[in-house]
Length: 435
Image (cartoon, rainbow, N blue to C red; front, side, top):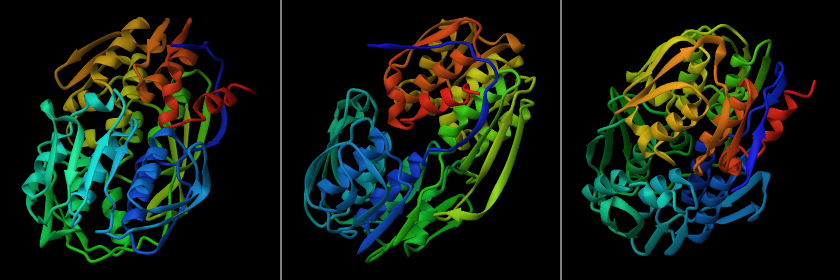
């Protein structure tokens, strides 16, 4: 596999627009396909993962205009098949774990039809039992390989609403069950141990579904139809986090990322950075993007200190924990990340891959059962070395940011994985150095 080298950089300076939000793009494709009539989607992310979602909804009969195998236009038009009109198909989700977990909720409640969902080697290592088990409780006809692994096979069945208590906060599992609840008899109640990102609830409500929160529970009622109409996708704070992190740890840097989604269930990264002493300035915009608050975030270099991260804030920054671990290498003192066992069920076992990546660059870091401990070296950060992305887009981008902040430069083995969520990442990072 080819390696890409990232050398130590001078100050990073400039203003960029955040790439479109991956989580919301996946949901926009699915809601458009589930909807009656045409849905217009503005700002859909053009990446490998989100193209998989467009291909998947086309497979089950939705009409997608404005996208091809190689490109996605700034505006898409999706003509849906309705809540109960999906055609049977074999679906390749590629590397898209969100698609693998959300789409079964919709398909399980179809009156008839059969579907097989499969993906790449990474997907085949990721268990689907966390969606399959509660769907079976709702009456779904669904099975998978031993160990809860894909391929996932679904046959249309009559569903009934249930009360399901999530063992671990997961927006993907919650969304799957809410989608299933639209076709189930009665109401479906999903109880969260901690609040997770609420994009699905916001988007379903905007599309006309009856969805509400009561305490720790999110409740959806059976529906005859939904009509999203128009969805605007804001910038992805999970992608922007890598640029904000680079500015925080490269001396004299000053970077602003515009158009960032500021949904409070996703902004834990900003709170943690501020707690560590980072210079973060948030300027909300007047408007909203598809029911989501948006704004600009400015990050400047600062002396950082270690912190402890755990409990209720973990679901608000689960995807940003790898880059937070890198930031912690540049902070004075110890940073402890706990209650994050969910990391072991991502594209890779992210506890193991983050520890391996940081250790390869000379950092002092150790894994725990549900997180990791970083013994920061203050401004010393990391030296250099080789980071193996292992097909994980966030590990690839972690390696690139480490390189520009390092003493000796970093080679990333498998940088192409970044295209899963942020195809223009290398160019954007480079543009901040060109001043």
